Length: 512
Image (cartoon, rainbow, N blue to C red):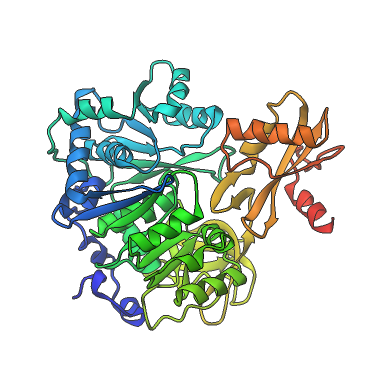
């Protein structure tokens, strides 16, 4: 039977798919596996692994062989530092040689890599550090002061001195991990508790991920792939990095503060044929007015993180000449719906989330967990271990089996592709001495999909105070989590149990 990488039609793959075909793509088996080996070590003869475009305009390039050797050195370094299998290693760096060395070196050692967003403030960082209790935290020199708050935690500062130490180690390392050992903690704004939680991925996660790589991103040998999403989050790590590398395919990343011009330069300079990004990135590229200044060779396009508005979809189709394909999933389950970029017999239905990827049973269910008929509003769910796993997204399925997104059904806000916990923002706002009560919801925004809006009962009001509060959140949580809209109110609506009634707040917003 053919390998899954050789299938080119939707009809054929749906007919022949079997879970065993996924395992055939990897060196590891159901007993022993290591993500770093699958992504780097077994591809050392395949040339370029990553092309990096930096915010200052320069680029860097690293081969599979170089990254394999540097990650082996770091794995040896960690072992000599007493880091054991299962210990957590937090890495708060932008995409760079140091980032790949530390994250994939930790995974190779058998430790658990914990990528962290570089714009986290001290409170957001502390929440995650206190939750995962790491042995080591790796920081950029500009963030070195953040490490002083964590007494007893070994802090490594990225730079020439650290690399001098790492370079002393052997450039070979044989992983000893089991397939079901934990490999990566990916923090997300969870829906099952108040604060961000770590989704705990094992080494075998790379096997299921192949579904997204092949059918959500359409990755195939020969692609020149680029994903500008930060690898501190799920899309940038799993779909931007691990997906292509696990198949021996070169990827492209962006490092630094977002800049539309630099992204477009990278698409031209790197001769990218396969581009994947959050929906907001496409909107920002169009808004920049710079798209006509560059030449493209795009053959496949995909997006994720939030729905894409029809106007942007039309403009992207007009500029690149290929349909933009949706890829939908959750951090817990991976990709479950896709529009199969590169599959010529799959009709990309404008505005839809696509159809289920092979191997998953997806449906729309009601409040009782019953599957509803086509055209009926409910919640998108996927069958996992014999039970329906709810996505917290409302949706419908049409008569042709395509799924459609109809909004969030919980208190998580998705803004510009970022997942934001309403409760986490509220908690931070309440730490300001002049805020007595706070409630946060997401409201529609033409550029970002949604933005954070805060309803506040405060001791002060006015524009200056609003700006003060925005800076207060930016410096404590993250630059993307602050409330872009603020409204001062006399009281916050509550449920009978005394909790914030966000449903009422949403109705108040809609009704003006």
